[in-house]
Image (cartoon, rainbow, N blue to C red; front, side, top):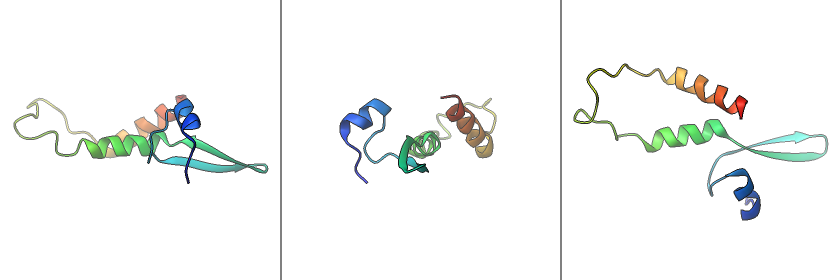
Length: 77
């Protein structure tokens, strides 16, 4: 579905970004999918941390915790 540029700009939705669609009464409601944006952002970082760039004291990150954090952030937006 194509969203007009003027609407995308107001909602800070990039072309090709994920959106959430719901029905409220007799209307279709389109919202930014903050979790999808987070997943896409994290995917784009894949391969950026190598053995040479990794900090030796960095703790492992739990992907489930990242998902919970991003959902919490979306709820506050």
